[in-house]
Amino acid sequence: SGATVIMDSKADTVRAAIICSTHLNMWPVPEFCSGDMVTAILRTKKHGEIYVVSIYCDIDLKPVPDMLKALQPRARKERKQILMLGDVNSHSMACWNSKDTNARGKAWEPFISDKALRVLNKGDRFTYISPTGQSIVDVTIATPGVAEMVKHWATVDYIPGTDHVLNEFMFLTDNCWTPRPRGWDLCKTNWTQFNSTMEDAVSPVTGPLWSL
Image (cartoon, rainbow, N blue to C red; front, side, top):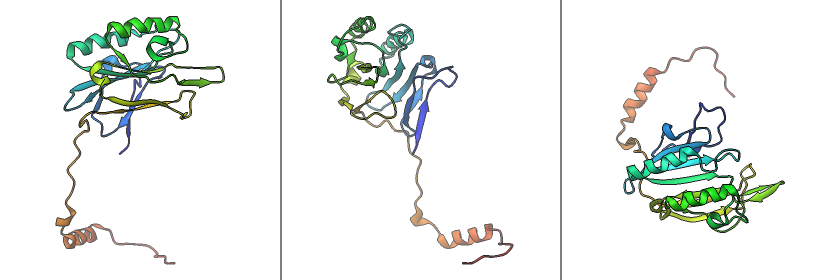
C-alpha cells in the first residue's frame, strides 16, 4: 500500500507532480520532466505504454510549453498514447467551455486541433475559484486512443485545500499493476518447530519483572 510521488526534485520550484499507487506500473521519463511538467510511462498489457503528463503552465511563459510540444511527436513516433492533466492558465470557449477566450487559449486551440488531440472536460463548471475570480483552467487532454478509455469525467464540488476544485474520471484500462510478490501458505507451517526456533532465538529476560 502507499503512494509514489513522481516529480523533478532537482527543480528550484516544483509546481507539477504525479501521485500514484506504489503498485501501479508507472515509471518517470526524466527527459520530459521539469518543475512545471512531469511525465511518466504507464505500462499496460492491452494498450501498451501510455505517457501520463501533469503540467502547470505559467501565465508569464508560453501558453503551450516547448517540452509538451516535443513530447507529442515523440509519442507519435513510438506509437504511444498521451493523457495530460494540468492547469493551463488559459481560457478557451471552443475547447473547454470557458466563459471567454483569451490569447493563451487561442494558442492552445490550433495545437489541439493540429495534433488531433481531444479535450475531455465536460460541462462548464469552474475549476478555479478564489476571492479574485473564477474560471476554467484545469484541463484534461488526450490522444484519441486514451480518450476512449476515459469515462465519467466531472468537476466535483470539493476543494482539497486549494483554490482549484477536483476533477475526477474513470480510466478504463487492463492490468497495469506491478506483479505482486508471492504470498506465504501459512497452512503448511510447522508451528511446533517455529515456536521452538523463536524460543531459542529470544534472549532470556533479565532485570526486574513488573506485573499489574
